[in-house]
Image (cartoon, rainbow, N blue to C red):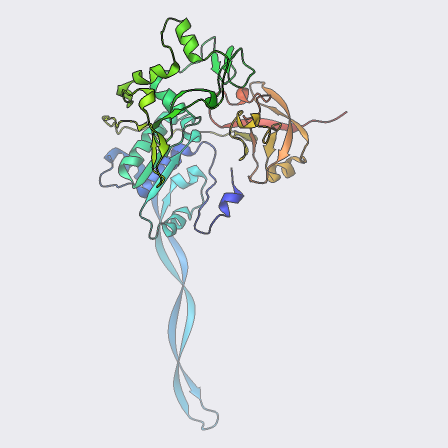
Length: 411
């Protein structure tokens, strides 16, 4: 998905639009371009080398050449030697390193050259990994590759969780790989739904109505206090109903598992402030854990993309979730947000009604809205509007889905 807004930020910014599913190949390319081949596992170095082929290519090069010629002076009639510099084109044979990873990604052949120019006088690098990676069908192998990138390149790696406390939940909960026959949803649709949006089977307090902790993306256990009252049940009431005994939810803060990096600290002892110089003094940072690294990674698995329409799961820049849409200042109806290029290709207009359908038979009738902040033949489906059920189109978790988009004819 191309982003013309980001691309126009700066001449020193390189924005690359890649093929769908190419994230695994991109991780390998980063290792290839930035990895220390001297310390990297030999098996990985050899695999990266397998993508390179050296080919001889004939190019034309301009060269300057001095040519002597005799010139006759018209007045004196004398001849004298004059040296002239001329430019001519000559054939030159060079060796070209072709990297097959660029073709797998869908990048232009001169990408490495462009990156090399941007690297001039740069000495620190950051890699931000988000939901596109850990919802990818090859997420496990990509995670291993990110580990290699952090160890054998100069990149500092930051993983952005998909929700407020996704990181904290992942540290204390084990989920089944396969969905069972009955699902319990917390702020998402399930057979039985616990929701702080007011439309579930059992109401729950929102984040600003709870006392407790969440784990931020910079790996800090941060306290949150209730800003608004909530006159209903909370998770602690459910815990007590099934046999656990605690007066308050915050009583569990002390028992967060130390083997996952949590500290044995009571909720009321956690600091919750920023210092005058901006230093964060909230909660505590997770303790570093020591692990034995395994360097075995798998080869790239071909990710075949079907021909046809593609939708991406995302929200507009001013909407983050269903909670922002609850605010009356931002409340709006969601739509299928399509690039101007897609609207033109489909012969559709802003506000038209379309159907979105996939191979499994999931079908959605929805208004289409022009989105000038994206480019390419693509659209995205939002999650901030709970009236739009996007889940059937993204059952595999990956944020891209192949669909058929058709305009609705009015009779």
